[in-house]
Amino acid sequence: MSLPEAPKRYTPMTRAFRLGLFVVELGVLSSFAFALMLFISSVVQTFVTLRNAISGLGDEESSQKLLVSAIEQADTLLVATALLIISLGLQSLFIGRIEGLPNWLNIRTFDDLKGKLLSVIVVALAVKFFSFASEWKGGMDILLLGGTIALVILALAVYGGVLERSSGKYKSEEQDDAREE
Image (cartoon, rainbow, N blue to C red):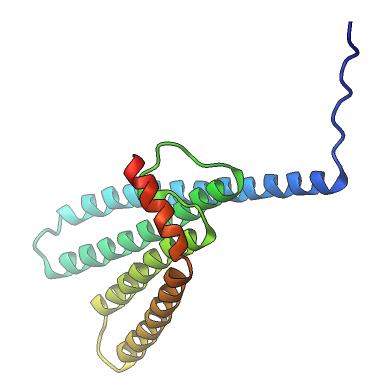
């Protein structure tokens, strides 16, 4: 008859790291919850907008309101997508990979996560500019906004290029994984 094993005693540092992982998991869950609610809100808002638009179908004002609502919905969906990518990325990096995700959502490094977010941010900025332009009443303010957004997109493109060059070693691993699937 053998003696029962003594329970494992974790060092204070191990406990601190475990607490850190728990906090990351809370962040993952909160980001996922926000993404989910934004997706649901966007769908509900679409139905409400379409129901209200039916009565004014063909009016120029109604068409303009419909266009603005569609652009705002696209913006909401992009923010929800960014939150979903953050949630899945942090889950993959800190807690463990999630099986069954499409290849474009497989995140192995922080560089992968940043690259995916950069793409969403650039599109969100373009949508935001389009939203502003659709309601533009004239004046120079659109030039200032467009120039500012263009500079931000240029900075993100340069950063993305640097990021891609510095993470080239990970690309071959991803290609190997894609061939296996």
